[in-house]
Length: 276
Image (cartoon, rainbow, N blue to C red; front, side, top):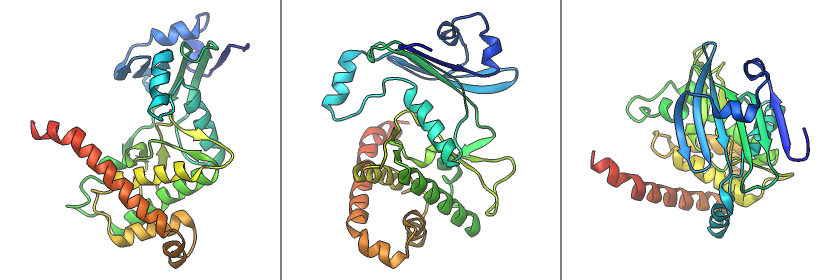
């Protein structure tokens, strides 16, 4: 390690890349490409029959950084956010990905080359997919209640620790399927942490953005009013009467923000779906 390079490589990549420059070796990996953007690439590879996800950042340039800042968006400059967020959640005991390789090279944030490799979480299903048919085929009540309680617990502990996610949707919760989830034994892993922020204390603004995103993403899965109240009680850890009294302004903002997110989603995707 020096002033411009950080490198952590565990097995199997320590052996696979022995004698090679890891930054060149990671670029040479081949697999199923999930995302290819300017300056960022995500792919899945298999090593010895085991799956891994690879995210490579090559720098987005000062122009893109300026464009993000001008639109009040914090740019993602490299893999460091995800690396730090994984370590943070792991320390908290919140299930997430396991990183097996991380590298960062270059002091210029516009040209920095970085990567992170994580073990594939399998077999799993996203909560978005798991809950998709709930309006037509409601789940067992006990399982639904347990899932709501677990999501509320993860959200509360994450925010209390000073971390906010910035992409806090139910699709970024993975439900582990082996063993089959039951109300008494289920495991959820939180993923897609590349935009996460960590501070001594989570600002209310960013906490509320996370909660609005989570609420928006669960609008169409058939949750009842009781389900929503159950989440609030778990998240705030206080009697429901107190929550409804003390957080009335927040709850109104969440309804408004979720409606705005839904309207934006429909403008963006509804025309394409209608053409199918």
